[in-house]
Amino acid sequence: MNPYYTTVSDRANHRCEYCQAPELGFNFPFEVDHNIPISQQGPDNASNLALSCRSCNLRKGSRTEIVKKSGEKIRFYNPRKDVWADHFVPNVDSGQIAGITPIGKVTVDQFEINSPIQVTARQLWMQLGLFP
Image (cartoon, rainbow, N blue to C red; front, side, top):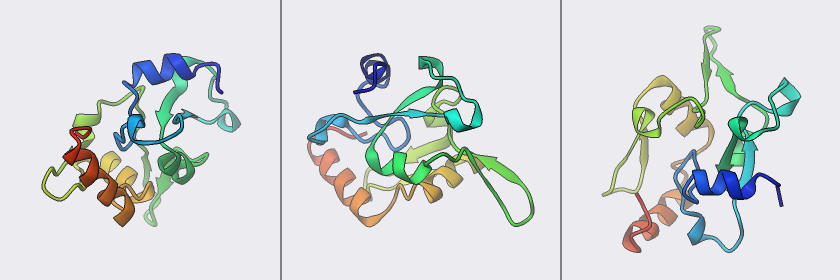
């Protein structure tokens, strides 16, 4: 297990810092993600780490942004720089999460935060009182 797991998971209140999935709903610990990957000279310390569910971590990979066809770069949501509620809003009726800024929209899209299985799980978490 990552040596920073306890620090990072406690700070995140045991939720994925990208999609807000509750770690309690899984049968294994979430992953410690480097917001800025080591391959891009990101530091390996708590100030660069986020708790991430497997789905978000796999879809983020070593990327930190997308480049649109126009050449515009839009970075992904970074839990160490950004406030989640400034970029996302959950819909408690549908179980979907909407991006409300370019950063939020790109993150929702690239991380597939509203994939059918994610939305179904989120609806169950809402019934159990684990989300939002």
